[in-house]
Image (tube, rainbow, N blue to C red; front, side, top):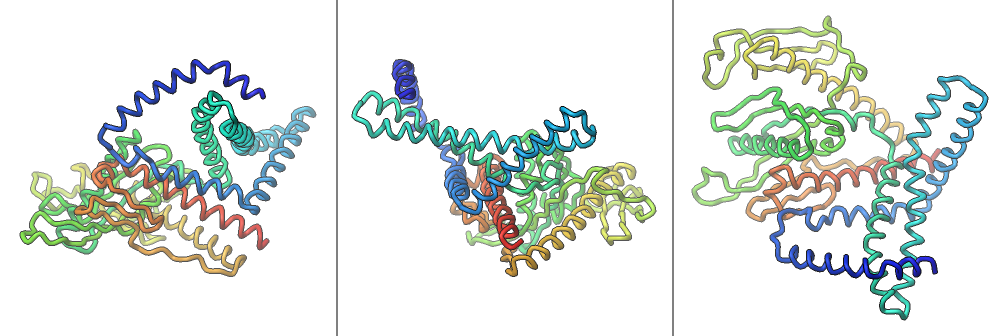
Length: 422
């Protein structure tokens, strides 16, 4: 076959790379495992679930309809272009075609890779030892590329969230646990700041309410970077920590909590807040010492009268800077309220269509167990034994990917159910 001829022509090169891989595999086997991403079971689980999704009959029907729509849209655009049609219509159809092109390309790539895997599996079953060896070398990389294509297909099938590309505001509040809860809130702040460093985002502390021992009763972190909200939106909820506090003499494990709320940072196009709707109060900053504390009216409290949202900020010495930071948080909160209202309406419409109630999630989304070096996300039933890496922000990426995959599956199931009922 053509595949067999190609493999024979590059036999020496394949053997060379096989020896190289064996050399580095031996080195890696004796290297310390630095983080969960070394084995990346999140990715393995995602590959299996994506394969199962694409084998579902309903998904295949939906995919076929999308591909047909792409083909029809291409013909319409060609007709408009050839006849000199309306420029606005051409622009709109071109944008719609660009969105579906990634799906079409991924489907074509997957079809070809499925054929390649089938041919390589046949070669592995053959009688030629050399061809078996070469096929074994190639099949792993081919399956990896097949998994990547399936990830892109499932991602393209999921309805877009227009806010995913936005920057984010992360609000952290100490929950039950007193002093230990405030210290845990500070640890979560460092975790998200560490993730920003990994992703190349710019973090800015917007407002704080500190305790005397470097903890936080409340802290807001602005994260500027493309895709920040899409990656972090699943962090919202109650985070639980189990550990021995530094002040615990008997070595008993205490349980404390902190709440996290992740809001998309709106642009001026997303939301408009009129100055006439905002009431501003200036007051003297309180807290730890300093020449500007309790001496000048630099702190600011903003109230958005239509929604009742109140934001106070005293982190800067300048009243003008405090107002700008408070305004940033206020816009994010008002935008989040509008998003929640729209999402509630969509959920209600979905319930009316499918006549079933979506299961509510537990408020406790994640547990950080220090004695066991364990992080467990209760929504996806995923446990990682690399607590230190997660708290630095490095290992948090693996959790976020698993949560994104889980969310994509839920959204896709909802779309398919709506189509079935419509």
